Image (cartoon, rainbow, N blue to C red; front, top):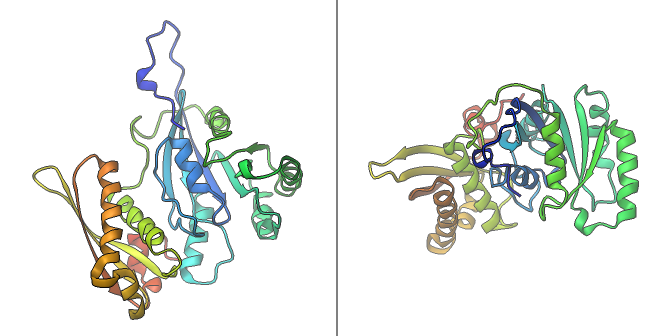
Length: 313
């Protein structure tokens, strides 16, 4: 899916529509497809995607255009029962992303038959003043009748104003949802230039892309007690970008998993991340990764700030 390209609109004698701009919070349980939806609405990748739950950690904003409307999409961490400090920070970031939103979109994996995990989310949503939109995702692999039943039950529980059936992966229904979100945005000037697709700094986006490759390349071998810390990001005189990052793990026994034999696994992770960054930035990228063991990194206030999370007691 691609956003409307307003730069290529042919001249018209019609008066130019007044600009509209607003904030939409995308929330949901882990692995519901929130990041995939944000990317589809923006028209290009701005959020990392993984089949692992709890991939998104910080609030990342994607910026989509729909006619005269600029839609600021907050891709939030998944909402779940927090157990660790990192979990609490992620849930705090998710609900924080919904503050002052013009609309809240709850993304639900339509394939899941048991939905008890949604009860605390629905209870909180029912008392929220923002416009609430229910999005049943992954409908391309779900029978129609159960979908309608789920929509009715969830709508009643969460007090939703509207329901959409989509597949963020294939794009089915995304254009209709985007058009509706654009129509809901209040009149006002755009907050970002028309060619900007995210509010994330290139430095933070670079760490997110490396973390995505960390999950993708290691599959189930490395648990979630890992992070990618940005060290330096500088433009060389020839226009290429030099990036240094630190992969932080909790135990020394995890080092061989990340490094691989003779450093082969780390090389694969780095090369995949470097290629994606070069494509994203449009310049040559020099990416340098090294691994550090830091047993209590999840309690490091400085690291939370570096990866875009608030420190939560």
